[in-house]
Amino acid sequence: MKKFTVLFLSLSMIFSLVACGSQNSENSAQTGQTANESTTSEDTQESDLQTEETQTESSVESVASEQETQEKKTLVVYYSASGNTEAAANYIAAATDADVFELVPAVPYTDDDLDWTDDESRVVYEYENPEERAVELVESTVPDWESYDVVFIGYPIWWGIAAWPVNEFIEGNDFTGKTVVPFCTSASSGLGESGELLAEAAGTGEWLEGERFTSRVSEETVQEWIESLGL
Image (tube, rainbow, N blue to C red; front, side, top):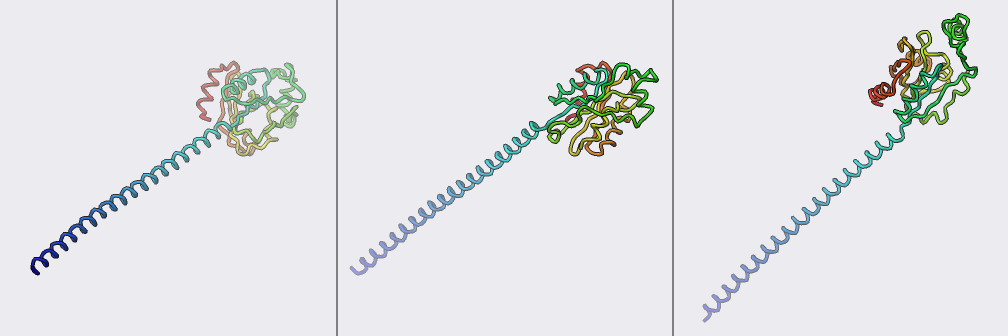
Protein backbone atom coordinates (compact mmCIF):
# COMPACT_ATOMS: atom_id res chain seq x y z
CA MET A 1 0.00 0.00 0.00
CA LYS A 2 2.80 2.39 0.88
CA LYS A 3 4.49 1.61 -2.41
CA PHE A 4 1.33 2.39 -4.28
CA THR A 5 0.96 5.69 -2.45
CA VAL A 6 4.58 6.67 -3.17
CA LEU A 7 4.12 5.76 -6.82
CA PHE A 8 0.97 7.81 -7.05
CA LEU A 9 2.63 10.86 -5.48
CA SER A 10 5.62 10.54 -7.81
CA LEU A 11 3.40 10.41 -10.86
CA SER A 12 1.45 13.44 -9.63
CA MET A 13 4.65 15.46 -9.20
CA ILE A 14 5.83 14.50 -12.68
CA PHE A 15 2.54 15.57 -14.27
CA SER A 16 2.66 18.87 -12.36
CA LEU A 17 6.20 19.62 -13.54
CA VAL A 18 5.34 18.80 -17.14
CA ALA A 19 2.24 21.00 -17.03
CA CYS A 20 4.21 23.87 -15.46
CA GLY A 21 6.94 23.61 -18.08
CA SER A 22 4.43 23.63 -20.89
CA GLN A 23 2.73 26.69 -19.47
CA ASN A 24 6.06 28.49 -19.07
CA SER A 25 6.97 27.70 -22.66
CA GLU A 26 3.66 29.00 -23.86
CA ASN A 27 4.04 32.18 -21.82
CA SER A 28 7.57 32.66 -23.15
CA ALA A 29 6.36 32.21 -26.71
CA GLN A 30 3.57 34.71 -26.15
CA THR A 31 5.98 37.17 -24.51
CA GLY A 32 8.40 36.81 -27.43
CA GLN A 33 5.64 37.33 -29.92
CA THR A 34 4.43 40.41 -28.07
CA ALA A 35 7.98 41.79 -27.94
CA ASN A 36 8.43 41.18 -31.67
CA GLU A 37 5.11 42.85 -32.40
CA SER A 38 6.12 45.83 -30.23
CA THR A 39 9.51 46.11 -31.96
CA THR A 40 7.90 45.89 -35.40
CA SER A 41 5.38 48.56 -34.43
CA GLU A 42 8.15 50.86 -33.17
CA ASP A 43 10.18 50.32 -36.35
CA THR A 44 7.13 51.10 -38.46
CA GLN A 45 6.41 54.27 -36.49
CA GLU A 46 10.05 55.38 -36.76
CA SER A 47 10.02 54.71 -40.52
CA ASP A 48 6.78 56.65 -40.87
CA LEU A 49 8.29 59.57 -38.94
CA GLN A 50 11.42 59.55 -41.11
CA THR A 51 9.28 59.49 -44.24
CA GLU A 52 7.15 62.33 -42.91
CA GLU A 53 10.27 64.38 -42.03
CA THR A 54 11.71 63.79 -45.52
CA GLN A 55 8.44 64.83 -47.14
CA THR A 56 8.27 67.93 -44.93
CA GLU A 57 11.85 68.93 -45.77
CA SER A 58 11.17 68.37 -49.46
CA SER A 59 8.01 70.49 -49.26
CA VAL A 60 9.84 73.29 -47.44
CA GLU A 61 12.65 73.28 -50.03
CA SER A 62 10.12 73.28 -52.86
CA VAL A 63 8.19 76.20 -51.36
CA ALA A 64 11.43 78.13 -50.72
CA SER A 65 12.58 77.55 -54.30
CA GLU A 66 9.20 78.62 -55.66
CA GLN A 67 9.18 81.74 -53.50
CA GLU A 68 12.69 82.62 -54.62
CA THR A 69 11.64 82.31 -58.26
CA GLN A 70 8.49 84.32 -57.69
CA GLU A 71 10.32 87.06 -55.80
CA LYS A 72 13.05 87.48 -58.42
CA LYS A 73 12.55 90.84 -60.15
CA THR A 74 13.89 92.14 -63.44
CA LEU A 75 14.28 95.70 -64.67
CA VAL A 76 14.99 97.01 -68.17
CA VAL A 77 16.72 100.40 -68.22
CA TYR A 78 17.32 102.07 -71.58
CA TYR A 79 18.12 105.22 -73.46
CA SER A 80 16.80 105.37 -77.01
CA ALA A 81 17.73 108.11 -79.48
CA SER A 82 15.56 107.11 -82.43
CA GLY A 83 13.26 104.37 -81.08
CA ASN A 84 15.31 101.30 -82.04
CA THR A 85 16.64 100.64 -78.54
CA GLU A 86 13.19 101.29 -77.11
CA ALA A 87 11.74 98.54 -79.31
CA ALA A 88 14.39 96.05 -78.16
CA ALA A 89 13.87 97.09 -74.54
CA ASN A 90 10.13 96.46 -74.77
CA TYR A 91 10.73 93.03 -76.31
CA ILE A 92 13.06 92.14 -73.43
CA ALA A 93 10.56 93.41 -70.87
CA ALA A 94 7.79 91.31 -72.42
CA ALA A 95 9.98 88.19 -72.48
CA THR A 96 11.12 88.56 -68.85
CA ASP A 97 8.02 90.14 -67.31
CA ALA A 98 10.23 93.07 -66.31
CA ASP A 99 9.60 96.64 -65.28
CA VAL A 100 10.86 99.36 -67.62
CA PHE A 101 12.74 102.56 -66.81
CA GLU A 102 13.53 105.01 -69.61
CA LEU A 103 16.48 107.37 -69.35
CA VAL A 104 15.41 110.79 -70.62
CA PRO A 105 17.92 113.64 -71.03
CA ALA A 106 16.91 116.86 -69.27
CA VAL A 107 17.74 118.60 -72.54
CA PRO A 108 16.33 116.24 -75.22
CA TYR A 109 18.27 115.53 -78.40
CA THR A 110 16.64 116.80 -81.56
CA ASP A 111 17.05 115.16 -84.94
CA ASP A 112 19.64 117.79 -85.82
CA ASP A 113 21.47 117.11 -82.55
CA LEU A 114 21.73 113.44 -83.50
CA ASP A 115 23.10 114.05 -87.00
CA TRP A 116 26.55 112.54 -86.66
CA THR A 117 27.39 113.51 -90.25
CA ASP A 118 27.14 117.20 -89.32
CA ASP A 119 30.36 118.45 -87.75
CA GLU A 120 28.36 121.15 -85.98
CA SER A 121 25.81 118.81 -84.38
CA ARG A 122 25.48 118.28 -80.66
CA VAL A 123 26.60 114.63 -80.67
CA VAL A 124 29.70 115.43 -82.72
CA TYR A 125 30.59 118.27 -80.35
CA GLU A 126 30.13 116.02 -77.31
CA TYR A 127 32.14 113.27 -78.92
CA GLU A 128 35.02 115.61 -79.64
CA ASN A 129 34.79 117.09 -76.13
CA PRO A 130 34.46 114.21 -73.62
CA GLU A 131 33.92 116.61 -70.72
CA GLU A 132 30.60 117.56 -72.36
CA ARG A 133 29.27 113.99 -72.24
CA ALA A 134 27.91 114.37 -68.70
CA VAL A 135 24.29 114.48 -69.83
CA GLU A 136 21.84 115.33 -67.06
CA LEU A 137 18.79 113.09 -66.87
CA VAL A 138 15.23 113.95 -65.91
CA GLU A 139 15.36 111.02 -63.47
CA SER A 140 18.09 108.54 -62.62
CA THR A 141 16.69 107.00 -59.42
CA VAL A 142 14.57 103.87 -59.84
CA PRO A 143 11.79 103.35 -57.26
CA ASP A 144 12.48 100.29 -55.11
CA TRP A 145 15.86 99.83 -56.83
CA GLU A 146 17.09 97.38 -54.15
CA SER A 147 14.39 94.84 -55.01
CA TYR A 148 15.69 94.12 -58.53
CA ASP A 149 17.95 91.11 -59.08
CA VAL A 150 18.51 91.39 -62.84
CA VAL A 151 19.00 94.67 -64.69
CA PHE A 152 19.20 95.03 -68.47
CA ILE A 153 20.92 98.20 -69.68
CA GLY A 154 20.13 99.30 -73.25
CA TYR A 155 21.61 102.01 -75.45
CA PRO A 156 22.56 102.86 -79.04
CA ILE A 157 26.22 102.68 -80.05
CA TRP A 158 27.88 106.04 -80.60
CA TRP A 159 31.40 105.96 -82.00
CA GLY A 160 31.95 102.43 -80.74
CA ILE A 161 30.84 103.06 -77.15
CA ALA A 162 27.57 103.28 -75.25
CA ALA A 163 25.61 106.46 -75.90
CA TRP A 164 26.69 108.73 -73.05
CA PRO A 165 23.21 109.64 -71.77
CA VAL A 166 23.39 106.33 -69.85
CA ASN A 167 26.54 107.38 -67.97
CA GLU A 168 24.81 109.33 -65.21
CA PHE A 169 22.59 106.37 -64.39
CA ILE A 170 25.48 103.89 -64.38
CA GLU A 171 27.69 106.03 -62.17
CA GLY A 172 24.90 107.06 -59.81
CA ASN A 173 23.55 103.64 -58.83
CA ASP A 174 24.88 100.74 -56.77
CA PHE A 175 24.69 97.44 -58.68
CA THR A 176 25.93 95.28 -55.81
CA GLY A 177 24.22 91.88 -55.83
CA LYS A 178 22.66 92.44 -59.25
CA THR A 179 23.19 90.62 -62.52
CA VAL A 180 23.60 93.29 -65.19
CA VAL A 181 23.08 92.55 -68.88
CA PRO A 182 24.02 95.26 -71.41
CA PHE A 183 22.42 95.35 -74.85
CA CYS A 184 22.69 97.80 -77.70
CA THR A 185 21.30 98.60 -81.12
CA SER A 186 23.25 99.82 -84.11
CA ALA A 187 23.17 99.85 -87.88
CA SER A 188 26.56 98.19 -88.25
CA SER A 189 28.77 98.61 -85.16
CA GLY A 190 29.14 95.74 -82.73
CA LEU A 191 28.86 95.75 -78.94
CA GLY A 192 32.59 96.40 -78.74
CA GLU A 193 33.89 97.33 -75.30
CA SER A 194 30.77 99.26 -74.40
CA GLY A 195 29.60 96.77 -71.80
CA GLU A 196 33.06 96.44 -70.25
CA LEU A 197 33.45 100.21 -70.01
CA LEU A 198 30.06 100.55 -68.32
CA ALA A 199 30.95 97.78 -65.86
CA GLU A 200 34.17 99.60 -65.06
CA ALA A 201 32.28 102.86 -64.53
CA ALA A 202 29.73 101.14 -62.28
CA GLY A 203 32.35 99.34 -60.21
CA THR A 204 29.76 96.92 -58.79
CA GLY A 205 27.47 94.15 -60.00
CA GLU A 206 27.99 90.97 -62.00
CA TRP A 207 28.09 92.13 -65.62
CA LEU A 208 27.41 89.65 -68.41
CA GLU A 209 28.80 89.99 -71.91
CA GLY A 210 25.65 91.45 -73.44
CA GLU A 211 24.29 91.51 -76.98
CA ARG A 212 24.11 93.79 -79.99
CA PHE A 213 20.91 93.97 -82.05
CA THR A 214 20.31 95.45 -85.47
CA SER A 215 18.22 98.58 -85.78
CA ARG A 216 15.22 96.49 -86.81
CA VAL A 217 15.56 93.60 -84.40
CA SER A 218 12.62 91.19 -84.25
CA GLU A 219 10.85 90.03 -81.12
CA GLU A 220 11.71 86.42 -81.98
CA THR A 221 15.44 87.23 -82.05
CA VAL A 222 15.23 88.91 -78.66
CA GLN A 223 13.24 85.97 -77.24
CA GLU A 224 15.88 83.48 -78.39
CA TRP A 225 18.63 85.54 -76.80
CA ILE A 226 16.75 85.79 -73.49
CA GLU A 227 16.29 82.01 -73.41
CA SER A 228 20.00 81.47 -74.07
CA LEU A 229 20.91 83.51 -70.97
CA GLY A 230 19.24 81.05 -68.61
CA LEU A 231 18.37 83.74 -66.09
